[in-house]
Image 1 (cartoon, rainbow, N blue to C red):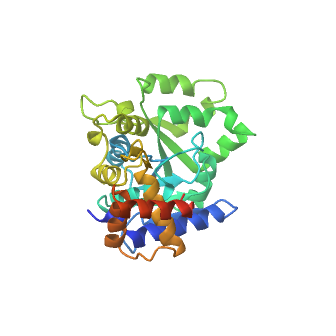
Image 2 (image 1 turned 90 degrees about the horizontal axis):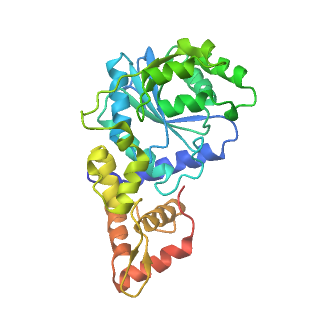
Image 3 (image 1 turned 60 degrees about the vertical axis):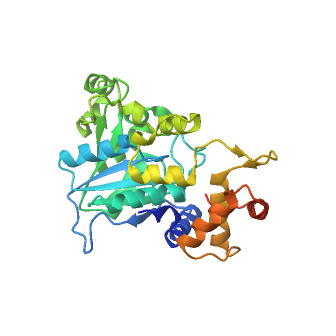
Length: 316
């Protein structure tokens, strides 16, 4: 696992998958890791956790574990290239977030990963139903997300869109910030929501007694990393390894002459150079060595940083 952060062949393959999907004008889904070992039996029920995963947290893992306990046959971690209300996601690139997800999925049998170029659940449900026609699609969400799903601001024709969505998928809803089953039932009883209530049910989490799901949010992790506060226990070890090595959420450093040093920006520039062929690196060892050289407060490090700044073509 130590080398996965610098696994250049995998990173370049993920970059190509992201580039092709972003260029596709129509709705599309790009599987990155299969739901089951080959040959794959079709899961009867697929639990879909769709999000930015910026970063993957123990909160996400708790949702997956809860879905397994309730009889879901396979889990799909779905990463939209542009998530609703999160269009300006910064730092950890889609490629790097996909890298962490696929590494986490490697040690969780029955878990797959896919990219999608649509953010609305109704669009994602249509793609998933087409991809897995004999499976039941169950979206795993938090309370804030089910509120968003019923919000008319996201639809031109709300009722028609919700009918199409609930014809293809159901929802299991985990509590957030004290909003549990009572809050969910109140939401479902509102005008316009009641017809879809049969497709929504609560999902019970089994977090540690002292853990709060909101304290395990991606936002909380980013804020703690940026503030220099302890954060490691909030994320799975794949995410912890990536955050420590790549430093996507850390504030800039300054070398003695006042130059601003952005380690994660250097990583993105190196990946861009490898993807375009401007940098002749091919292995994880090459990548790791160059990244560390470019971060060094030395004359060689300064030369590498100057070269990488000239590229100005980071990977998304």
